[in-house]
Structures are given as C-alpha cells and as structure tokens.
Length: 117
Image 1 (cartoon, rainbow, N blue to C red):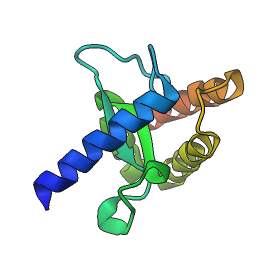
Image 2: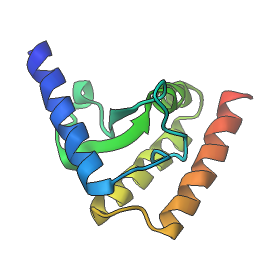
Image 3: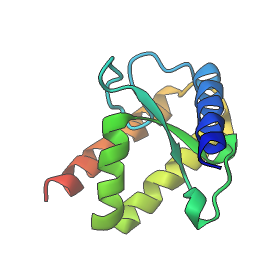
C-alpha cells in the first residue's frame, strides 16, 4: 500500500500543477524554490478518512506544509479555516485570481503569527 499511495500522491500533485499552474508561490503565498518544492497536502488526512482525490488536495511547498502541520496543534480553528480556504480553491479548478491570492497572503500572516507566538 505504501508505494501505491506515494505514486497516487505524485499523480495528484502533477494534476494540481497542471490545473493551477503555480509559478512562484503555493496556496499560502510561500515562495517555490529548488529547495522548497511543491508537495501535496490532503485537506482531510487520509488516516482520518480523507480520500486520495483532486478535491481533497492542496498545493503547498515543503516548508509551508511543515508550518501548517505545526499550526494544526497550536491553533486548530485557524487550521480548519485554512483547509476550508483550500476547499474553496479546489472548487474553482482554475488559476488563483487576485481575490484568492489576497486571502492567501492574509492566511500566511495568520499562520506566521501562530508559529511565532
């Protein structure tokens, strides 16, 4: 199961990149670099019953994903709000518009505050 799971994640990641076409930033406005690559985030964790599906996936860089999982334990309400934001992005299935980019930057600020409390 482990190897299949990894392959499915790679396929989902490639699908998300094709649809959303991120160039410089992930869904929480973190810079994409060679060392901070895009990864797949499951909005509802697979171990909590989340599906391996496009609709349950978000594009986050490696560092964003690590920070976001710290947030999960420090501010579960914010964690839920950001996951709802990811659901909104997925429902559009298009490149992020200026309104979604603005929300992304606001959530990044809130996440940073949570990390450095």
